[in-house]
Image 1 (tube, one colour):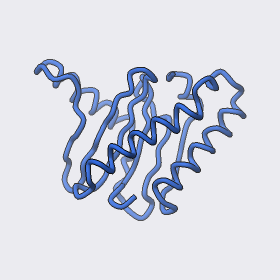
Image 2 (image 1 turned 90 degrees about the horizontal axis):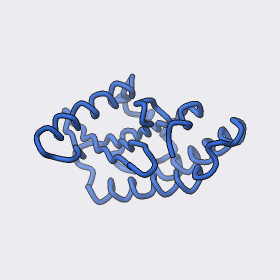
Image 3 (image 1 turned 90 degrees about the vertical axis):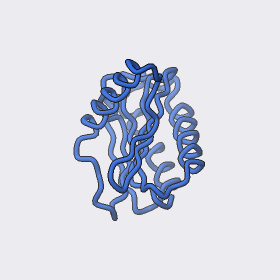
Image 4 (image 1 turned 45 degrees about the vertical axis):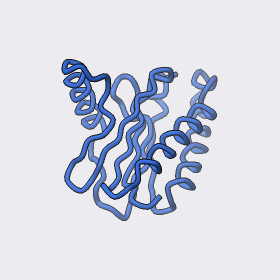
Amino acid sequence: MKGLESVYLINSNGKLVFSIENSTRKTQINRPEALSDFLGLMEAIASRLGNQQINLIELGRSTIYSNLDKYNNILFVIKCDKKTKKKKIDELFSRLRYEFVRIFDGNLNKPNEVKRSLMNEFANIMIKLCGTEFETSHSIEELKFIL
């Protein structure tokens, strides 16, 4: 996807479950947990000011979109350049959520080897969706804190 820099899935404990990052751009976030803390702080401030949720933050040449799926207890985060169309971001959020739930719903209590296989399936779908220049990483241990 043109303009996409990275995607992160963060569980309710603020831990990284899955990431996919453009390996040709050197804009990766070194500590996605820090991003989760930052977004949590921004949402707390927004809540005190009367807003429900922060969905967009502009930082330099990038925009960070977040979408909290309360039902599945996971934060989806997309980092892209500012020129990326909002419609594309919304489509990606929708597809991320659909694929994640389709693959993992009902499978989180399975043995680690099954979860590892499911995570690899999810990673392959995300690479097809985002592009072959993207690299993935994940933690099956952090899956227990979602859904």
